Length: 144
Image 1 (cartoon, helix red, strand yellow):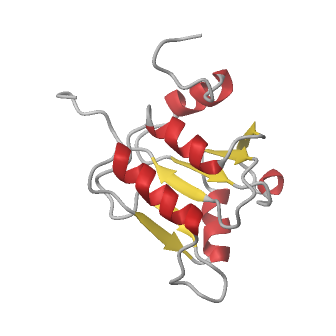
Image 2 (cartoon, one colour; image 1 turned 180 degrees about the horizontal axis):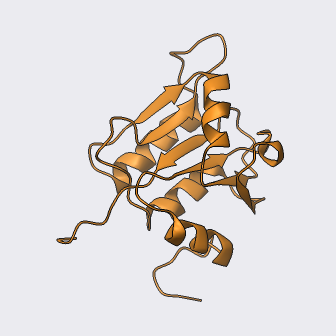
């Protein structure tokens, strides 16, 4: 055990978060997501929600403040403007960890394509539909 690191973040995920560089992306996906065929390395967090994974990851990883979209969810098919409850939770978690940053969205197949280029995928046991989010890693400023 280590101090101040959420126990949800095991050694494999900690290694990935530390190895990622500025601008690299990590996807947190739900239990229905086709992660195995996407390509990037997968860390499984079965039995945990995507919101718990997001909260734990954002305790350690800064989001990129050089871009307009640091956190991106998948749009609801057939209703791009609809916000599912899990998306509202994502937004609240992001705002708590990263002041002024918000969740944006991407069309389903564009989201799949973007995940294929991610540094890694965290497959959760999230059962709520659209429990998927891509995070772009930022930097730690010298004054932080």
